[in-house]
Structures are given as structure tokens and as C-alpha cells.
Image (cartoon, rainbow, N blue to C red; front, side):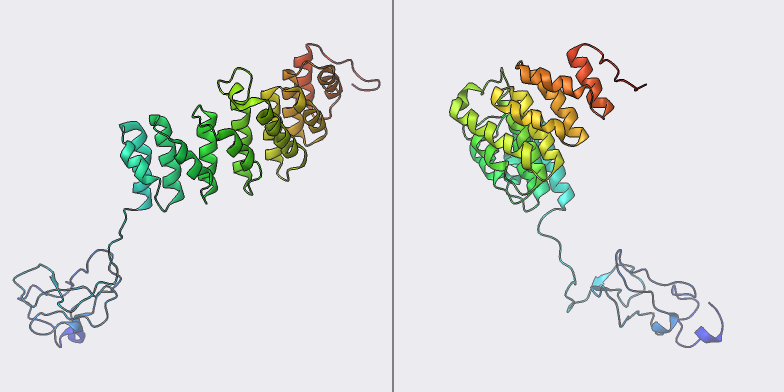
Length: 302
């Protein structure tokens, strides 16, 4: 750094501001260090274009502390809320530390991920209320709506659960429809504690909505989930839709063959017989396992 180029305006060599030394800007400052010409004989540093612009070093060389500029206005203020990752972590930990108050306050967080984790934390604590579920089912974030369906499928119950799950079968987001089908299959399965609480009329309504999803939903995963739910419920009214699914995509045909195991009607056995000749080997294998026998090879087939 020596030479005549830097001689003008450069402090005396006895000064701490010797050649090669430059003050470091604060962490995160986008300002580039000035050249030696920015220093006067008094050793003062006065940058004219700093993108941070909040602090200046004092003129006294005896002190290395930073001093705030009296007329400076910080360019960025501290956020009002902690970072979203910290809020999500706190909401998740509340379910393991007994922090019901913290989890309940997180239900009003502006971030959907925080609300979803708070809902799971309250369910883990056994403190989830009916109002919490109703608010979650109408949440603008589809992942929160899906999480509300999942906690009901795992045992959390409210009187309006079945009606809300049926309504969510028409949700525009496929992940919500998939979770709703799974939840209906769990709470309406034979032996489920709340199956009888729904009544025959409500059960027929659920079966009708699941049949509609299994037959005509645009998303294959939703059709597959509906077929699985009809098989889990095992009601004869759901058998026609399961038999129709034997002509769908391979993954749905495999699910339909498994669902036929829940039905004792002759139509179910006939459907399994037809599946022995399915072009997908996994469908054939499931049908063979359920029927307990190997199919006879077709003529001309090795």
C-alpha cells in the first residue's frame, strides 16, 4: 500500500491508521471499505456513501467504539414478530412441554405452518376444542384444513366432525379431499367408537359423497382414497363404486381389489375373479392372495 500514490492525505506512520489498515463496517453492512484517500490528517473517517448509514466511528483515535450519528434513521427496523422458523419450533414444542397457552395463541399466527403445528400440539395435549376444529376446517391454508382432518382420524372427535368432513370432500385442494376421505374411513369403520353416533341417515350421506369422489374426481389420488374409505367402511352401498374402480388406473385397481376383501357379497367375489386376469401383476397377486389360489394359465400363455 506504500508509494507516492497514497502519500497525500495519509496519516503519519506513527498513527494507528497505518498503511493497510481500514476500519471494518458493522456486520451486515453493504458498504465497501473506502480507499486511503478518505482519511484526513486527523485520522477521522467520513464515508459519503454507506448503504447502512447508521454508525460512524468517532474522531478520537483513542477509542475504537462506534458512535451513532445523531441524525441517522436506521434503514431497517427489527421485526415485530420472531422469525417464522422460531415460531413454528415453539408451536411444535408446546405439544411436548404442556404449553397449552402458547399453542392456543399460535392458532392466530399469520403463518399457516405455525397454525398447523399449533393444531397438532393441542391435539397431542388433549386440549383441542370443537371451536378450534371448526376454525381449522375453514382456514385459508389447505395444509391447516388437512391437519384438522388428520387429528380427527387419529381420535379427536367433535359432534360436527362427520358433516364437516363430508363438506370437505368438495374442497378445491386435492390434499384436503384425500385427508377427508381417510378420516371418514377411520371414524365410520366397523368398531369405530363414533360410527353409531352418526346415525343411518348421516352414514348414507357419507357413502354417497365418497361414491361421487371415487367415480368422478379429477385427481387419481382422491379417487384412490375414496375407494379405500369405502372398503374401510365395508357398507354394501359402497360396493358398486369399488367394483367400478376395477377399471381405473393400476394404483386405483390395486386399492379396489384390497377393498373388496371387506365385502361378502357375491359381486365382490366375482370382481376378485375378474382381477385374476388383470394386466397389472400386482392386481393379480392381491386377487390371488384374497382368493387363496393361483389362477389357471390362459391358453397360449407361458
